[in-house]
Length: 234
Image 1 (tube, one colour):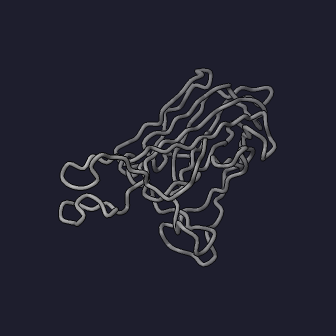
Image 2 (cartoon, helix red, strand yellow):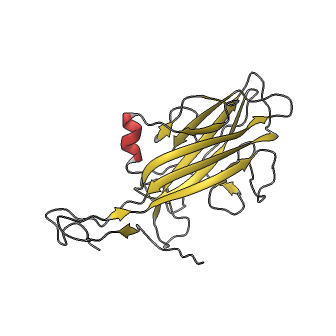
Image 3 (cartoon, one colour):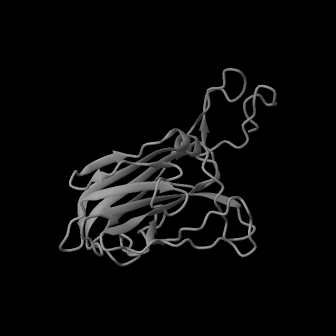
């Protein structure tokens, strides 16, 4: 068993070039499991906390930084941290921040509602997910979902409006590399905000959820019928 990390995209095909090019791009996935009974960062299944989201790529889950999207404008001081709304008297915000290669095609976002969250006394009744390039409490840039009844344990797939679907075909150039001179220069940021609500809901102390995203990395070197080599520069 082995593993390696390298720049993509990963293409597979019988015919690399020409009018019968049949190359396909490998679909990638990132995942986070949230256990709201776990309040210590660095613990497996860390659920985040008030004004804290988790990163998908730490083992175990740890605090993830949500950056303010830069709209492609490079800054010598680097990206700035975004503000996450604090929990209110009836809503708690939890979620995951994912970093993707810029221009990726966001294909699917899955929300697994495993155990209904509680604050020890009150149980969340609804969950409203927002999928955006920043912390969001209204319609996301990339996708959204109808309000989920938390007692309905199971999996929900995010839905796309026409505009959101167009955005998801090429994720935005959001965040620059915090290590100047290192590649890649830019990342796309996808934030899945989970807004849990009830008539009264304080800090969550129990509950479990999971978030999975599936995406394909863009082939930035692909050619066209008038560019040699026909179909790809690789």
